[in-house]
Length: 409
Image (cartoon, rainbow, N blue to C red; front, top):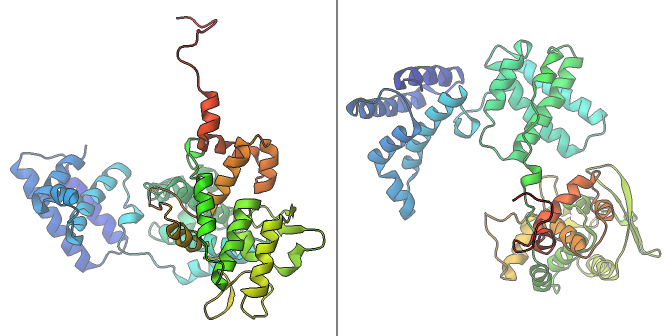
């Protein structure tokens, strides 16, 4: 373990290098002095998170307030002081979730990111991907700017950047690393970094097969659908959208992009170009889904010239933005149906796709067919839904009372 005095000295230098304001540093120094006095009074020289949290608790009664739900922002700030020291001791970096300032890109960095985004556009990447990857590449370029610039990028610098991602959810880390890898591929081809940098970007440690998808029970889905008020325009729209997901398994992004030309009404077919895979698939336009869409078009959709079928109903009237994941639609009707919604349970539109996949799997639908319905390119992405089905898991369970054959006791 590091001595507290050495750790504080190193962390202060790092915060200065990151551009923290002097007024902020003055506040941190005051906290560090108080912590050092607390440690000295108890004869403690080496830093540990337990000892630091004891200081936090002594300073503001942190744990009692936490149990009582009465923590103030100033109490949380003290907790961050302790957590930041612990993160620096472990990773040698200030994690982004505690950073109080964002490094700015210089003119050269802005130009580099713009060229990267232009390449993504030329490659046919979606608008949302171009924007997201540009933002994340900007974060990485700004980080390199604090360590000598992009030209000094090497495995150690990439490792330091990866350390700042500790604490993020797996999917967030995966997205950030994918963006960095894509940017470094561009930068390497442009001669801005050494090609070896690409090999230094690690793969996100996948917990995919350990993750259990969030699903709704069949009864919950039915209650949500029944709770939608179809006597008003928004209700007609929301009803059609939710049916397209629960019955056909469409992604929210594909629903937002649906145009009138995608519907083959005489043939009862729907053609969808999947945003995630780029594949154009043909789906049967089920009767209840088709009539829900027709009802919305005839009696609910505002008058506008946009080719998208589903639009926002508040001015300015138009298509849903790329940032809108339609999450609020599901939450609104789940609450109206008195179906529990909480932070511990993922409740985005994607959870309805998870529910459909689980029901199809329980009914004996081949996993390859489910993958086609959901637009999965790899059946392993579909197989994960076995874990969300108690019915299927029960079939896999071993009877502890059954005799075992050929197994040594």
